[in-house]
Image (cartoon, rainbow, N blue to C red; front, side):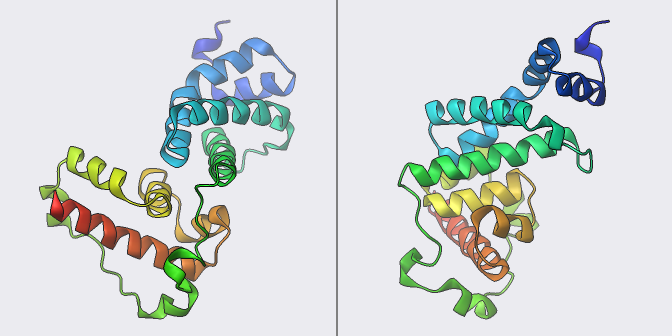
Length: 187
């Protein structure tokens, strides 16, 4: 039986039995996507590669804890995101949300309105402009936009990942969108 056409649930079962060929197939299926997730967060190719490799090792070590309540890819992505955030913090480029601009975000959460980017704005912005705008954002704003829009996490999940309150996560995303909009308008 060829593992390249095997369903992921079968591969996970084989990985639980420490089948190295199954582990290699899982790696081959997911490594590019997981590298991209890590790269968007740590913003360094070498660190992203390390985070991705360490995440696969951790996933295979903890494969018994995978219960199947989420897809395997989502479970693996959560490991990569958590490891990426940890690596980012270790690199001392991390700015605490509470320290950002000296403002307590929690205190201003009620003042923020839901000024999302309109559909017309999205249509007029090209992908290259969006990527340039993202590159110009401070790291915290880039992270929260990546987690929400590129990785699909909701506010509650972002608050858990970044270890901030739900209100801070919403406020941070709102401010990040405003900052991105401003940067794109300047391009």
